[in-house]
Length: 145
Image (cartoon, rainbow, N blue to C red):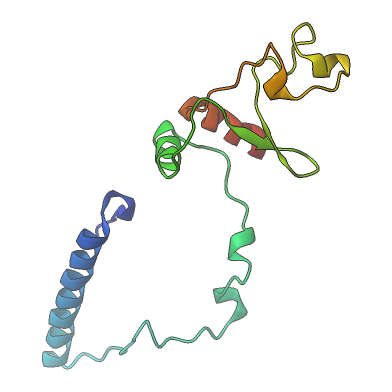
């Protein structure tokens, strides 16, 4: 049996692959019938889940294995979104999203480090952090490590 990387295919090529597999399956079943070899007729669309072990109701809550993210994966993720690349926001601990500034933790440049109340877009030292693939990878490891 050949292992197939379905991410390398588009929808049309996957449909074609399914048709080919269905055809091949039909030919093999015909050979089994001619040889009088019994087999189970299974329709995957009519199967019912009988055991709780076979079904995970919390699929959205699974922990993603954060051990590895390649640059190719990050590029694929990055390509799903479009918009500004000159700045990006991160979610704060109490909710809300905050644009990232390269100078935010520099106590000489950032007034917030000196406990001053100022909006970042009004600060003369604002230097927005650019979003790129390397930043996505770094944030991934920071979040899941």
